[in-house]
Length: 158
Length: 290
Image 1 (tube, rainbow over the protein chains, first blue to last red):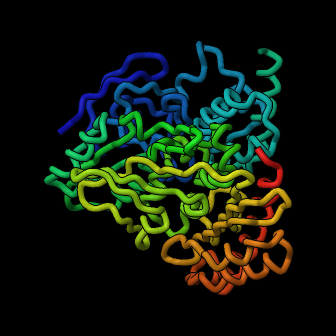
Image 2: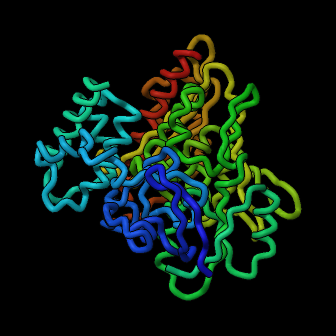
């Protein structure tokens, strides 16, 4: 039997129906059409489906849709506050920190969570924090440059 | 994935009642990082999921003069941010910090790591070194069992049908007691222990070890408490001879397998090296005081 779930996604109240066996990733992409969140491995290893659930960075493939009841979720669609890109998104473009783009939404969500927790990470801290976000194209160098530049720019703006 | 019936009770009794009266094969879900993957591989029968994260006491950790009472479903991210707990049990916090990625730690819990009972679970040796006790809640009441007896085999624990892990309790350590946990992985992050060692030591004012507990992981079907290794440390000042005896004792106690991550001989050797190093770190911490 389908469950009726009421939740908040990117500050907006959202209701949906889902099977209890459906993951939050499935619900976001298939039931709600929010395809910014990507499926990489589907087993919690790659981080492409990263979202923030009640303040914690998680893989949405390792969360059941029914667990979203009463929760607050932030996805990549909510990273840019308006029509302008968020600093992190802008820096990923400037540093060409993406190629195929499948890991990018997860990395942007994870980078935002990192910088909220630690506005001045060392490169090593950033690399450890983001170790659960796999990229098979870039070799990570450009990603880390974009992350460190985002951190510096956001500190100046703060 | 297998079809699910999902419940999220808000009290322990409600959870026990759901488990005791279940007509479907029931599973307790904490963070779900192991369980959801396991269920994706199942195809046939329906499962009842009892999500315990809405039970407040199961997601709370409180530190008092008596010790630590840990809600088993508290996620590792929230646990590792607790500086008060890290100050008391740095080794246990380090073990929780080693589980999976940031994303996995946002869901995975110490209770889940324990109940899932992987031989390579990082927090189990650290819990054992810290004398942790499982408080088990069932329809018939409560019982307590030491963590080293809770896990009964690979992926097996001693919970009976209708029972669940209600809390993990760690008695307050004696003065000048500290722990450390180390594991070996071939990568720097995002990997599963090839071998792990947790050591807790208590020093007297002169720096002599007066009590110790040594536990090892990933080198036997379950994490093991190794009393012979602790005995080798007690009475010493953690000099090379005592460390070598402790190292030999854990290598002797280990019964590792050979797989693609390491041979049995390598694991037996490495668990000894890790034990020496963890004992030294624990002793340094114990000497630094509160």
